[in-house]
Amino acid sequence: MNTSIKTIVLGTVAGVAASSMADAQQAAPLPGSGAAKNVVLVHGAFADGSGWRGVYKELTSRGYRVTIVQNPLTSLADDVAATTRVLDRQDGPAVLVGHSWGGTVITEAGVHPKVVSLVYVSALAPDAGETTAQQYDGFPAARHFVIDTHSDGYGFVNPEKFKIGFAADISDADAAFLRDSQVPINMSVFATKLQNAAWRTKPSWAVIATEDNAFGEGMLRAMAKRIGAQITEVQASHALFITQPKAIADVIEQAARNTMRADKAR
Picture 1: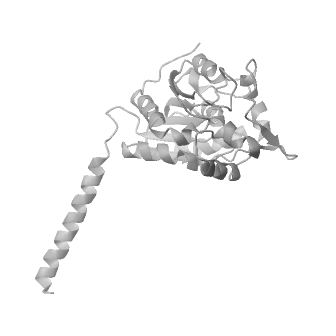
Picture 2: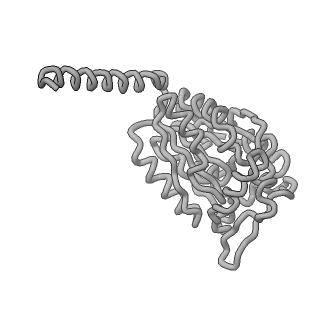
Picture 3: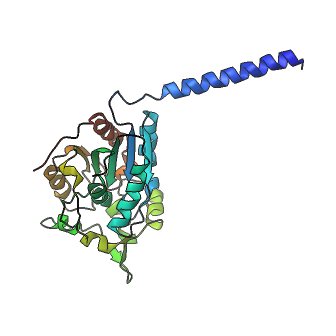
């Protein structure tokens, strides 16, 4: 090929590629002015951060920077430390989101100065000085959610009860994968008292799965009401962080657009 022609062709290809990249970048809508652009997702017990994939995809397509914490599930302090490390890396205000046990983690870690709002996804929300276990007092037992605790103090969801208790609205194959890839939690974490309750000083939202078999009837709504959260209900199981990515992303976006550090002291 003639050198001058080759140069023109290569230049044209490069220009088209650059234009395509620019178009792709412009295709993702940016968060509104004044909105928090960072989102940190915290998983709960018996799972890992990969379950947030759908929420991650939904939010990044809207222009948010999303980071996922991988909790060791060895102690509350360890999980809070893992979350704090991620928050320290954010380049500005962040929405902190927790599922299930992750709600306890964000309640403690959410006092971080970069956190502007909290989102509880079928999540626990203790107060300072309380334990997570205390949140179950006064509510009926979740009869379909059975935890097998081993001699070392770590618990797994009972294999026979896993689908109905944890993931009733996903396929048998996907439920089996979640069941067989469980991350056990140190059961002593539920007896650990919290030192902080971020929901007392920062605005909160709650997404509640109406068919969540991991909690007794009325428990999720009672916790959400106590912390003054704006509540959204979705028809889903405890695995709503997997099955309802758009609904959860919509609520996170609401939280991102509210950057006021409202004093909700009670």
